[in-house]
Image (tube, rainbow, N blue to C red; front, side, top):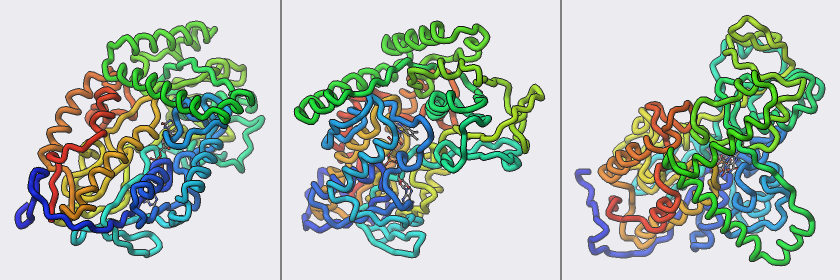
Length: 498
Ligand SMILES: Cc1cc2nc3c(=O)[nH]c(=O)nc-3n(C[C@H](O)[C@H](O)[C@H](O)COP(=O)(O)OP(=O)(O)OC[C@H]3O[C@@H](n4cnc5c(N)ncnc54)[C@H](O)[C@@H]3O)c2cc1C
């Protein structure tokens, strides 16, 4: 801190408005949103860097059979871009990808994206960020917004012999559409939402389906009805109906999210009852039923929604294997009981490395401190958005943000509204750098981890919601509180420098 002039929010500030240049990293849902909002706010000097050749992030990368959102489509839409044409309550991934492409095009964001250029390094110099990309491009920005995603880096399990497999092997987020699966023997490792969607989609097509299950999942029986042409025509005629639907669902899901933060809440009990009835009534064979029965509370892991998983997994071609995997061999997967499960295709539905965030970008902040050092133990951030010592860099869907079965679009919209208020002092010329204070961040983190222990995610299961200490890495309070917190920054928690 020495040698820098730190201003508190209360200090009288000399103001010289200055134009701000922004660099946005990533052109998925959150990066597109940022482009739209920056333009609306009158910030026209920005570039969106996207390492792929196409926008869409999650929805560009995940094209596996059966992919759909598990939050209703009318909620999983930007609040400012309702879509009367969603085909289903939970629409397929290709429709979601087309939605983001259309919105980005219509709102003039596509031409602001620099495709095929990965940001590799950010260094703070003289109150701004020097940015470098893989192609060797250099840029300078006053503010960086990292929209680099959270479910983005595939998690490849360390199973001995994986590289020996002679069939086709790929992660669910890298589905190889050149590989035929019809009438072939397909193995799936993992039982999360992606695995469940894949099982339902391919059980009728394959000769044999082996689901390698480490942990059974609670399955919420969610029907996925199609909207009729008449309904969609009505939505087109009366946009207020779509807005109302969005609003109603946001309220419903906020209520659900509020239940998550108390493991003993009535909402969690109701969900568990529904999942339990689904299991009891949906699985005939008592042996299979016991294999599929979880030993933890419903919603402790991300709740899996499916109208037909149990039907699919009971097809004669399907088998649930609960023996641990010993190794992968040329011809298939050998389990610890010595059995070889012969396969032509092996799908790793093993999720993502959820502790990466904007890494592997090398970030060098104030006084030469690197993000890798700051996050050596685990990632953390003040209100999920910003990091002490790393001024003018803000994350969307960053560490320890709200999780659960609700729309991350709403989360990103709220976060971006907060960030745009936070850059106001920079625009006004009140300071050149803004970052949360170490003290505010530590206080927040202590309260957060304390509260997180009481949430449903901390109620005793193994999941990707947990950090290296076993503490839920999430917003542990109600969604209404998150909304409230995001409505206006408390500037006393921030250092304004220069
Ligand atoms: C199978 C699946 C289903 C899901 N279903 C739902 C759902 O129903 N509801 C829900 O709310 N959420 C869902 N999610 C979460 C989903 O990830 C988010 O809703 C949302 O799409 C995230 O958007 P994003 O822009 O934050 O990140 P991403 O979509 O991951 O986009 C990040 C972008 O940044 C780019 N990028 C990353 N690093 C760099 C770099 N260094 N330089 C340049 N570009 C970079 C990437 O290429 C990518 O395009 C799902 C996720 C998965 C995997």
